[in-house]
Length: 347
Ligand SMILES: Nc1ncnc2c1ncn2[C@@H]1O[C@H](COP(=O)(O)OP(=O)(O)OP(=O)(O)O)[C@@H](O)[C@H]1O
Image (cartoon, rainbow, N blue to C red; front, side, top):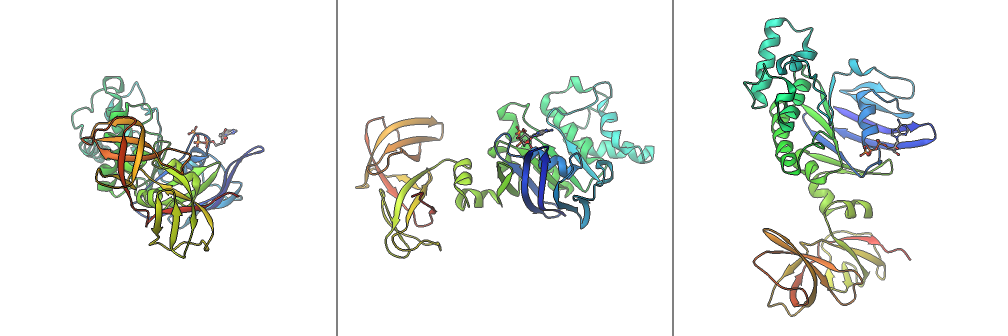
């Protein structure tokens, strides 16, 4: 339903977005994720029609809406945008806020649509109230209701939870996902918070310096990162040196592992092996030991930092928190790196 073909966005000499391509299917929820300044908001604004593209093209439901020579204005794109600051009109009731984009709809249907939207967001009795009488989370639900009311082809969400408490964010992200899925509305969100992206999106794009590194499921980004940047940005983990000894075997400080997945490295290749905290399992009975350098209690789990001979960086191990060990202790570990991700080591 939405396709970006190699778009570039420039501000004077600055290239903010560099050859980004992606496609979103009907009813899918996508998310652009990345650090500040990576170009995610510029991409969203170009889709909305607030920015021009310098090259490449944007298509919505097969129709060209942006290219170097075409620019359909925002109001003709059948999209709604939800901003981070809610942007509700303070002097209008909640019902009038939601009805704002419905001026072409006959009055009776307009009332019915507003009521349906209030039911959908789980706040059926607040139509007569004003924005300042609602909590931040309620205001953001209303902003979503206002965006959904005109039944747009696509909803764009620009860091919609950034002004809310951390606890509320994930809850609201799940809620908004439920509402969008119920309405079968396609959406694209921008965030720098991977937990929000995981909670809401079917497909996530990781951006860095104007480039889209990977457009994939959360599982794919975590388990099959295509670049060091994605490996580092998504989840936690460390890269340790290794060598490919036989085809489908890698030798590193944790031992020698048969690799189950295809890889492009020849025998003798020097690689870096991505080791996630869930790749190292704590097992008191294991003959393989590591020293505990640090520990971070996380409620259900403890994240241990482990010193392992041959690795100049501490490795991470996520263990259930009833495995309660002190810093300085030797700790039994088991590792299985058969499915592991590797990158070529810089010479
Ligand atoms: N109107 C503008 N004029 C000039 N440069 C801009 C403009 N808007 C953005 N930029 C630059 O383009 C690059 C990408 O900005 P953009 O806002 O798209 O990134 P972002 O990933 O959304 O960042 P953030 O998370 O901080 O909002 C940055 O280097 C930024 O300084």
